Image (tube, rainbow, N blue to C red):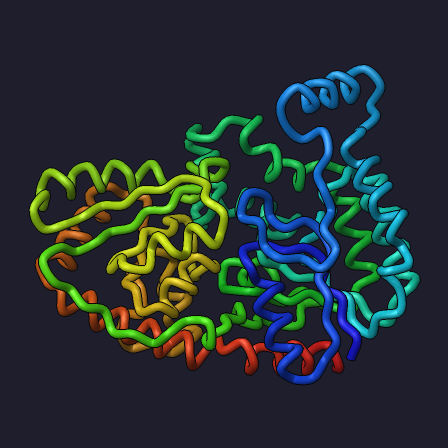
Length: 377
C-alpha cells in the first residue's frame, strides 16, 4: 500500500511508519514536526508568523482585517506541494487541525486531500472537538480541562484547546467526519469520548519501536535518579506544578539518597539521552493512559509516573503495576515517590513489568498490522 501520514506528535507517526515499512508498505510523513521536539518528517511545513515580533504583526492584522496570515502561508506551502498529496491508498490525519490553519484554509487543504486519495482516516491522539467537549461536559473526568477549570491556566495559554469549542471548529469537525472512513483512538483517554460513535473504529495502542530500545534491567547503586522533563508550553497541562512541589519535598527528605534531574523544552534526541540513567521518570498527572514520553521510558525499563488508571488496567487485564498512576496531589506524589525510594527493589520490578508490557501491547510491527487491518476493512 501507498500510505501518507499527515502530521507528527511525540513520534507516533514515525514509529508507525517504521512498522509499516517492515511490513513492506510505502510510507511518507508530511507536515509539521512538533516544534522544538523536531521529529523527522519527509516533507516539512514551517510555521510562519508564530513567534516574536512577527506574531504581533499577525495578531494585529487578524484583529483589524480578520485575515490569518499564518494560515495563508501554510496553505501556500501546501499548494506548492499539492501534487505530493495525491494518489495514496490511505491517508491518516494526526488531528482535526493537522495543518494548524483556521477553518477556511484547513477546509481547503482537506478538501483537496479527500478528493485526491482513496481513503482518509483520522487519529484521536490529542485535543480535538469530541475529546475537548466531552471533558468540559464531564469536568470530573481526569483531563487537561481540570487545571483550566481550576484557574491554573488562562484563556490565552489554553487557546489551542478552547478553539475546539468554537463554531468554526465544530464546522470543521463535521466536515472531516463526513469525509473520513473512520477515526481511531491511540489510548484510553481518547477512547472514552468516542465509545458508540458510528465512525469509531476502535483503540489501537501507540506503536513503540522496541528494536530501538535496548532491554536492560535497572541497576540501583548509591542514589536513585529521578528525571523530570518539562515542556514549558504545556507546563500546567501536564501537572508539572505538582511534580516540582513534590520534588522539593523529596529533595529535602532524601537529599543523600536521590539525584534529581530537571530539564526544560529539549529537542527529542537530547531529551532521550539525558534520561537514560534515570530510575524514575515523571511524565503527567491528567491522564488515564500513557502518552509517548511515558511509553518510551517504560520501554527502557523505567518506573514512570503517568496515567495508569483503573480503566487502563482493566482494558489490558493487568494484575500488577506497569507504571505509577499519577494524580494532581503533592502529598500523594510524595508518598508514592517515598515508597519507591525506600523500596528500590519495587522500582526494578515495575521497570521490568513495564518493558514486558510494551513488548506485548505496543510492539510497532504488531501495531502496524492492526492499522492495516482497520484501513483495509
